[in-house]
Image (tube, rainbow, N blue to C red; front, top):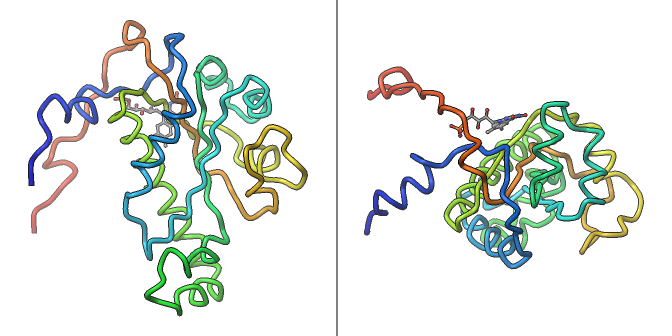
Length: 209
Ligand SMILES: Cc1cc2nc3c(=O)[nH]c(=O)nc-3n(C[C@H](O)[C@H](O)[C@H](O)COP(=O)(O)O)c2cc1C
């Protein structure tokens, strides 16, 4: 297997930063679809793919989000070309006959065990959010992940009952989709970055047994 070049690794990790200030360059719907087409291949347990992604592109949809945001996250979110709600579907097991067809018992094993459903949905949607960020970086975009918001307010505004006028598809109105975290997407303004914080060294974070 070929390794990625140092340049590619820097795009994904070494020089990839968390952005709060964005250039005016827009992000097309095709780019958002291309990001998903890469991110969807990341592994999840039982191939369950519990994450659901809501891409907020319009000012109108951003305004629905605004009241849920922590004060420090308002400006960066309202000025980002796109904000993604990374959510999870607590009824993800309904898709297992399609996604995990070689184990017909999987659906019922989850449907009988709400604790397993919640742990699986949270763990794997977090992973899928990370795959989405790496896919976005691989396709030249920058990310600004955020957990500083009120999940209950986001769930009420986006996953509550009622018809969403500006949604492409109506797959989350029945109360079983919950927000995990948010991520701004766009082309970041590198001139506005502050000094990068260090990371733990290998010996601080890892051990070899
Ligand atoms: C799940 C998650 C939640 C975060 N929440 C916030 C947030 O609410 N507000 C914020 O300004 N930054 C937030 N951050 C950004 C982190 O502080 C940032 O990614 C970290 O300091 C590393 O910065 P760097 O990528 O520039 O090295 C969050 C990051 C992640 C991954």
